[in-house]
Length: 98
Image (cartoon, rainbow, N blue to C red; front, side, top):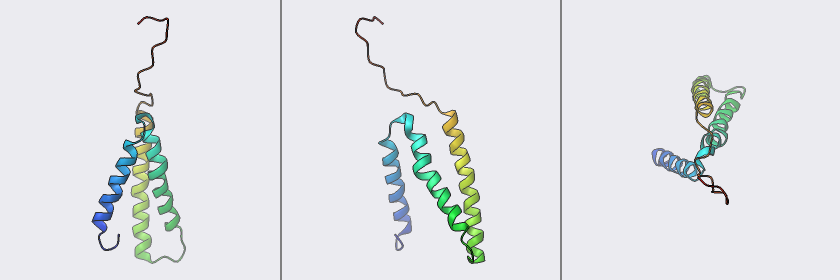
């Protein structure tokens, strides 16, 4: 991870995409928000709140926290505006005609 950060980042994104692909389309946005976006956003906020941090690190974390906040708001808007209905075809009921 430390020796090859780009490789690590690509591997992590691939795992993330695979996980999203394994989720039903109607649940994808909510799952991504819960498992990824909120977790990272909350972690950055918690780390930024640690007292006695180096000033440069504090600035960097504050910027990251702002970026994550905007991303979280964008994803929340996407979640609200995307249809949550399942795309599955309902089964036919016996005795009915279509």
